[in-house]
Image (tube, rainbow, N blue to C red; front, side):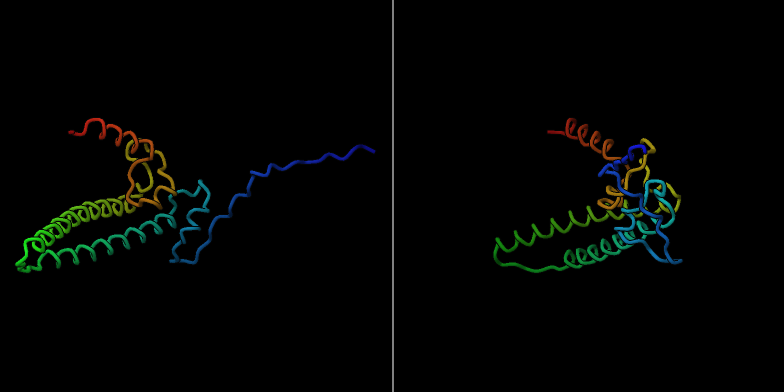
Length: 161
């Protein structure tokens, strides 16, 4: 009789998740997107998930923009200079908010265009996948983390002081 051989399974080896099967027209959940294997990166279901997320972002931005516009059109007369200064500061902040929101709106529209053209999820500079975690955190991302970090270093180094 020969001795029995034992097989050791590494504890870090986890089973591959099964491909997600959805009913026609259903949208993935965030967890389902995270659980999908790398081989299914930016398939139609993931593209639809991010398209829906971007459309929701766009609606929120437009709502905030309408609120800011309404506040900008309000004109009040203040007898107290401190109240007037506070109102002018709030007015300036609303203008800055509108500027930032319009930039975000352009980025969202660009991301929706990239989804339509099946370019979404890939770095504009290197062509590498941006990655699901980064896209979940910033759905308008256009470059991988390494490229973004390099851009930020250059911007910091050459910024006017």
